[in-house]
Length: 112
Length: 113
Image 1: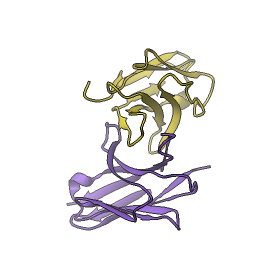
Image 2: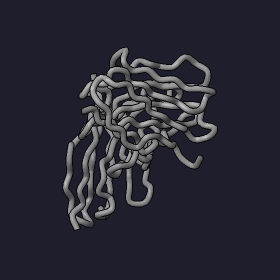
Image 3: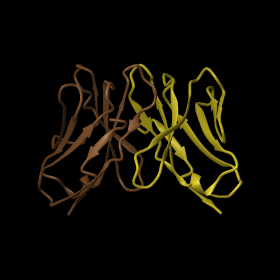
Image 4: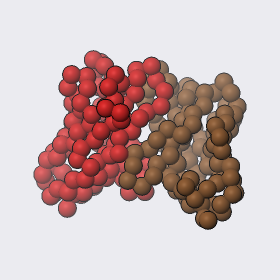
C-alpha cells in the first residue's frame, strides 16, 4: 500500500510560470511533510518542509500548501526557472519515528 | 565530512556475484537509512539504523540483502547473488535522532549484467 501518492508524474512549465505538484497521504499520524529536489546523478536534497499545525509555508519562490482535513499537500514553484528542472519528491513521516515514506516523484521541465 | 559519502559511485557486476556498498554518514548523525531508487521510480525504503537500537529491516526485499553499521558510523549494504532486478541507485541518508529532514548521499548506481 502506497502511503504517499504524488501527481503528476511529469510536468512541463514555461519559464516564469507556476509549477504545482500534489501529494496525498493516508496515515493521519504523519506530522512532518518535506519536499526533496533531485538533479540527475545526485541524491535528493531537502527543499522545504511543513508541520501540520500550519496551512502554508513559503521560502523564496517555493511554497507548501497543506490541507489537513483533505490529507493533501502541494508544492508551488512561483516564477519557475530552467534551473528548477529536476525531479521533486514529496514525503511524509511521523517525526519521532523518523522513517520517511516518499511519493513516486514528479519530473519537472521548465522551458526557457 | 561535510556530507554523506557513498562509494563506489558506480558498480557494474555480473549476475550471481556479491556486492558491497558503503555509506559514510555525516559526523554526529545517529540515524542512517538505505533507500533504493529504480529507474524513473520513487524511493524504496530498505533499512534504518538508529544509534544502538536494533535496525528496522522491514524494507529489505529478500534475504540476499543485508546491512550493518559498525561503531555507529559507517554502514555497508551487501547484496548476495545479485540479480538483474537489483539494478538501481542505492541511496544512503543520515540525520540526527531528533528528526527533521534527511541528508542524502549521491548514491551508488548498481548495474547487474
